[in-house]
Length: 167
Image (cartoon, rainbow, N blue to C red; front, side, top):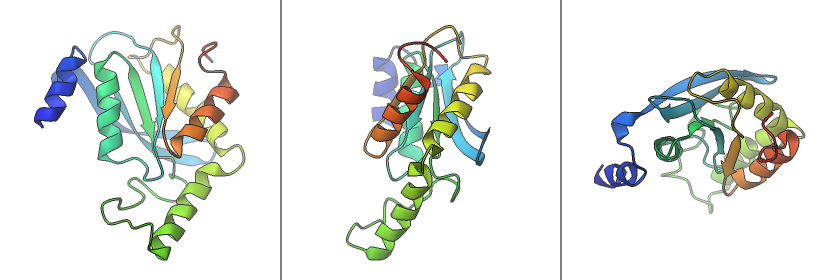
């Protein structure tokens, strides 16, 4: 908890200055569970955070809150919603040396790496963000990801030209 307070202080906002909530988003492929965090006041640039292979979990929600504390409206979707609600995998007990664990992870990752899946999702996520009162649709949209989320970030940016013009 002390670490979290330090991160919020360093961003110039307190934990009390950020609102975070679980949301659902209708996509072309179904209903995606996600987490949305934003500063309590004003309108801010939107950001999509693509999770790593362990999906939407408390650590990703904390990242969204920290980015929101820095002045962004952040959407962290469950990339595996087509297969399961978040969290999709128990990362605390996961072992890469366990074949059953790797097989489950492969099934989850396959659901978002299918052709045009991330691109369709990105369209729905941007549309969701654009409708939020805390998002300034005149500002450029951002996208962030790491590990499995890295390629999803590139696919999103290329498809929607995020970073060049707001879509």
